[in-house]
Image: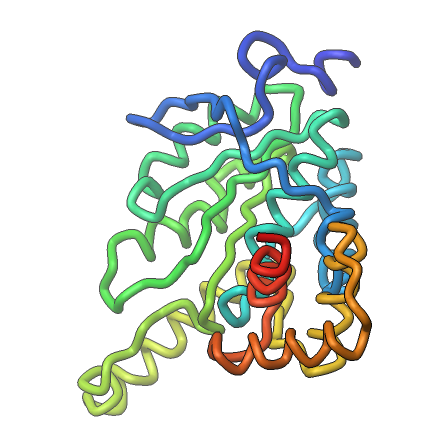
Length: 253
């Protein structure tokens, strides 16, 4: 029972790993992001948290695709969830896109581990005819014996359909275009849970700014805070949690 929460060997000492030559390597100083430090997008994160709790409880859990605009906190959400549930036996394995072909062997090794694992692929996108595309599809489908119950894939993408289509692709013959679209859709469908992180509207953005200001003991008149935050967003190509964070950092500097 304890091994299922604390693990053994390097799994007892570390909760975030990367992959090198098909082997897990501990990350000694992982991103310390906390859920309590992420205002906004509570509904979106709640779905990922519920799925993660199912994984930890040994119940069926989905692979998760968090997609949406840059700077909306998709990666931060995954890292914060990994930190939050590490004491419950959750481990995060960060996988680069070009390492996907090494993952099936790694999954076979992890399947026997009493801990639970999230394979985290950040900023996922493919070009058509990309070998990594086929590798990911195979991972999401699982082996002949089915996907290991203690592993789920969490990926973030700035694109709804993961594949960057060039104009040439679109102008190709109709059959090929249809095939490409079907391939792309079939991949995103293999993520049982798809969650959109949209750009916040003005009210949501200002709410995030207010919460971050409170967290950081930034005492500014609310109207002035709003005015400065909006100005900052205009200069920084728009509103996002990342913009809000950068704004607060600038005020504290």
